[in-house]
Amino acid sequence: MYVSDASPEPPLAPTEQAPTGCGPILSVSGHAAKNLRQQIFEAVRAAGRTTRADVTRSLGISAGSATTLSAELIAAGFLREVEGLAREAGRGRPPVALEVVPDARLVIGLKLSDQVHTAVLTDFAGTVLANASQPTPPTRKSLEDILAEVETLVAALLAQAGCGVAAISAMGVGLPGLVDHPAGHVVWSPLLRLRDLPLAEALQDRFGLPVQIDNDANMLTLAELWFGAGRARSDFAVVTIEEGVGMGVVLNHQLFRGSRGVGLELGHTKVHLDGALCRCGQRGCLEAYVADYALAREAATALDRSAHNRQSAHALLETLFAEAKAGNESARTIFSRAARYLSLGLANVVQLFDPELIILSGERMQYDYLYADEMMAEMRALTVGGGRVPCAVELHAWGDMVWARGASALALSAVTDSVLGERWAA
Image 1 (tube, rainbow, N blue to C red):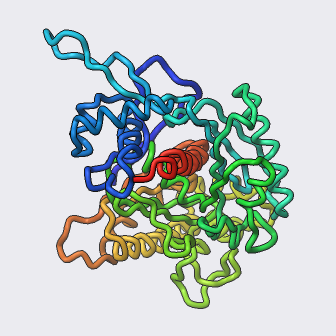
Image 2: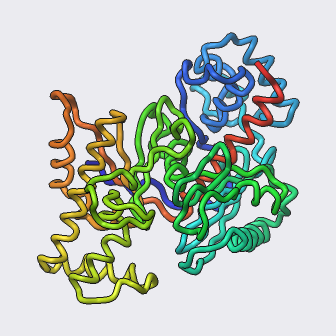
């Protein structure tokens, strides 16, 4: 298994260096579903800065089409011509390149959680211009509570950036739970007291902006697809372990949500009939054995302490981990048991989706028992592989803001489809 720091927190302001690009790096066939102008725009954004000749080659189109359509994108204010690509020795002037006009559109990405809410302001090229965060009371909230907290956070973000909400084109929001992305409804979330709430519509009414919402694990998966290790991969899965257990899956360079947008809930797949109680109200879910509250529940028994105070849960887990490292057999057993359940869950992911890569992420992955060699070996043993090369597994230690950055990718994608897909039909 490869362990990576994945990326530091995204820069807070653009630099003088050439842009590195964002978004999936697609093959010719991967672009086919969109009109050619949008394909050209997204190819330029993915490259950061590129020539028309490179766009021609990457999309498999004629030079005339690339020239004509890029000129239309320039006239519309979405692309611009720049110089600065390195030239070959003795070849004269460097070729004129294309890049996205960063301030053509601005979007906000938000990650909501019961510990801290985070937000980023991102330009059309995918560069983070500002970020903000605020701690949240660890209690279940009403819809109005969430709206008020988001309003406070967005105000702080925009104050830092020195712009108003009128400059923003869209907002993307990720939160834990079952989220009906197409409908904009939260079916269930540990953050909210009630079920089936129209969060996207409520946020749109509050801010006067188009709003896209999704499960937070999908937001982290979008961060990998747009900014991380998944940019050039056609198929991969991201499994997160924090307050809950989440999963996002990319198939053919696209986030897969299921037919109703609420699929891929790995944490609520059943690993033990009539087993431990999950916070969703059912029993035997994977996260009831692996997530924060499950480990804290076990730790309270092993260390003879109370797990009812949510604010002490992290301290309790840190103590449990220290005890395990010091040789406390009860503490080691708790982590080993959780790792065995995780290996079962990961084996099921491999068996169902056959991804090129599984990325493990989330705050709990600091506990090395959960990704020890024994767990990986058990995952492989539980997978019917037929002698094939086993699925690669990597650990990515992202910072808190990456979840919000993934939410900004959700907003960027929606804005791009809106201004280029609908405006210029194929």
